[in-house]
Length: 403
Ligand code: AMP
Ligand code: MG
Image (cartoon, rainbow, N blue to C red; front, side):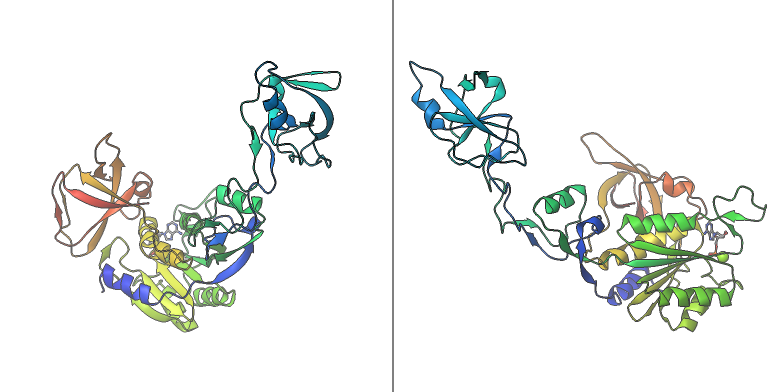
C-alpha cells in the first residue's frame, strides 16, 4: 500500500495535458478560459442617453443663466432606442430622446423629462446641472482592446453577459472532460424503482458521482450499470474508451472479493495500473490506471468512500484537465474537541464547521463516520486530514477542506 501523498504524486505525474477549444457562448457556461480576453468593442459602443428626456446643446442652456434661467427649445425630432435621429441638433433646438438611444451630433447633454415642460412643439428646460448630463459616452466603461478576462476565469452568468455585450461570440476554453460512469453491483436497483427486494440496495452513487462531476465542470456523458461480471465490466470499460471518455469513473467492485472485477477488466482493456490500495480511511481500495490520455478511477462502492475518493483524487484531476489547480476551498478553524488517529492509515475525518461571529470557525467531528453512512457527508461541511498517530488538542488550529 502507498501513502496518500505518494498516490497524489503519481496521479499528478500522469495527468494528461488539458485540451483547448473555441466554444460559442451558448455552450460555454461553467467553462474555464484558456486565454486572456480583450474587449473586441468599446463599451458603450456609441454615445447615448442615460434617461428619457431631451437631447440639447449645453451652450443654449448655459447662455440663459442669470436673468433668463431657462431656454425654450424647438423640438425638431426624436432619437429612439434602435431608431437614431439622423440630422444635427442645431442651436435653439432639441430632440426627444429615450434611454439608450444614440445621441445625435450637435447635442451634448440630456435633460430628463421630469425637469422640462412641453408646449406647442417647444420644450422648456427647468433644470440642467452640467454639460454632458445624463450622457453615456462611447468607451466610458472601457475601450476596445482593454483586457476584460484573465486565463483561468470561470464563465458564469455575469461573465457570459459581458462577453455577449462586446460581441465575443466564441471564446477559447479548456475542454470540459468527458466522463463515463460505470456503476457495478448485482445488488443495485435504480433509485426510482417503486419496489425493490429485501436484498437490493438503491443505487445512490450514480447520481452522486454524476452531480459531483458536474460541480467541477466535467461532463457526465454516460452512466452504465453493470452486474458483478468480468465480461460485462470489460465490455463496459472498452465501450467507455471507444466513446472517447477522458475519465472513466467506476463505482464498486474494486476490492479483493470474488465478485470485484474492475481492476481485472481495466487491465484486460489495456489500462496500465498507476496504483491500487492506499493507506487511507475511508477509500483504501482505490484503483487508478491510465490508457493513453484516458484515466480510469475505480472507486470503492461504499458511498462515503466513493465520495471521499472523488473529492481527493478525481476532483483535482477534473480541475487539472481544465487548466486549474486551485480546486479545494480550504478554511482554517479550531477544534472543539480532542481528536486522535489511533489507526495505521491517513484518516479523512468529516467535520461540521460552526461559524463563530468575529472569531475563528469551530469544527466538530461529524457523527456517523461509517463509510456506508451517507448522512455523515451530508451533515458535514468538509474534512480534515489526520496522519496515523496524530493528536489534535482541543482549541488547536486545523485546516479544513470544504466539500
Ligand atoms: P463494493 O465496493 O462493490 O464491494 O461495495 C461496497 C458496498 O457499497 C456494498 O455494501 C455495496 O452494496 C455498496 N454499494 C456499491 N455500489 C453502490 C451504489 N452504486 N450505491 C449505493 N451503494 C453501493
Ligand atoms: Mg460490489
